[in-house]
Length: 205
Image (cartoon, rainbow, N blue to C red; front, top):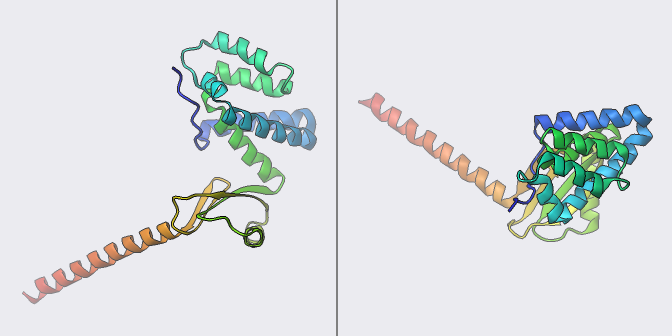
């Protein structure tokens, strides 16, 4: 049985493919085509996430490239743009279909950079009031000089504080992270203290 598609951060090769898709869309239709592609890429990514059978198909190493080609045309022909269909067929030929989500993620990041936006995933232990989310959004906008698109999530594994995924960067201000840093600092400081005492003892001898 094929394993479900695993979504991982874009690697260097994913970004090359995403850049190619981005440039093809821009060449074909300029900013307007990029906006259309952005919406289509987001919708396709959501469909893959929501439909396990499709994710397993894309990730399968058992189904031949020829059969995948035929199935891709059947599933997406007339339902996505010609550009997107051609792109999926290229990924199939290059054996990169299992990286579809990561490539779409990389493409989305490029789109947001172009249009001055950035996706922000905000994680907290309990739901934040909307006014607090808005304050965080305003501060991020001032710091990044880009428009943050906020997505608030609940993580019941957190003790408290907040954790943010800003584009491809993680900002961890959770209590667990603070405690971990405190523990590491205590270990480092304690080790330095012990070493200092040992040095003094040696010198005294």
